[in-house]
Length: 470
Ligand code: SF4
Image (cartoon, rainbow, N blue to C red; front, top):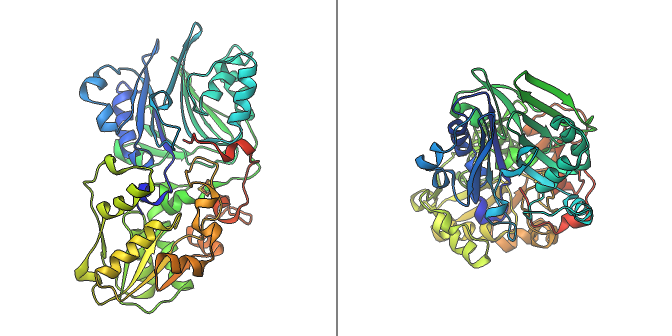
């Protein structure tokens, strides 16, 4: 499904490299492969060993980093970021990496996730005299690092991280050190790779394939990696109680060619589709998927059910960011601009339409209507995830609980509202089985909070209204 239409928006993506003479250029390619995680702003900070230099802007990677802009970014270490901003959280100053300069040196930060206690920490810090430059939750870490009473940067970082609650994959860079930290539940994906002698870190492994890097391993929940002239050092700043990787990364956010904890995203989605076909056998003529993220699940459903997969919906790839607008009226228009039914495929047919999730329901209603107007005799909507009934506080903009159609309505009511002939969601157990993680425990090391309401961390009241997510 198309994120910007559905109201389930990606968080952000981070990429970093240490020990390569073309660090900024490689970061450009890495960020480009993570562009699906955020299209509103992007930035790169580079170090030549003596000073940090950055460039950032609101726009796509190719728009901000022209050949001239890249000329300016020379160095051996770099961190980069692509950003999605929720309403009220945008603006140039919030585009990352955030770069701070002081007499003791520079500090650059790039963050994927959302800190649920950011407001509480910010209030405390402001009361103690801190002045914030941005409204980003990420800046809280910079202040905590700066206030730590240790002489070594790594000790300051290690001291600050346990104060943070929520989801975070941080890349932290000074002139001479590169640090990587993942929250104690490992809510967001983060992997380590090698490119020759250089180390690379990225939100998704697809970035390694693009630059020709070799995957080494996933960063561990609660791990702090420090890379400097002496090589790589790993230590646990927190002993994780339980891993809780975001399930929606498998279902929807990540690229199909990425692997998360050893599981290929396309394969997981295909299995979700197969599982759906086992749970929900439907009599129909064709199976189609809502492009792009639901195609893998639709192929799986078709394979398992024996009903042919057809391209019943086409995505118009040449609609630019102009149409990524938050207002409801433009969202409605956006569906028409971005998706078209293929009349020759669906006319006179009973269609199974596979989608990965339903958030507000408005997009599903439009697509069902489009398919019927194109001549489909029946449209059966099957969703490769359980109903999303709870908001996410960990960096995914799932809107408020009231906007989530499944929090207010039964499955039958949703079916009626979207105009489908039938509507089925995947069970939580079926979803866990299909993704296939082997971790012990009921949740198999996954966060399921938007489906079950059981949040892996404490939730602070302020987080409910947090407008700033990354
Ligand atoms: S609440 Fe849902 S979207 Fe948010 S981290 Fe958990 S699984 Fe992912």
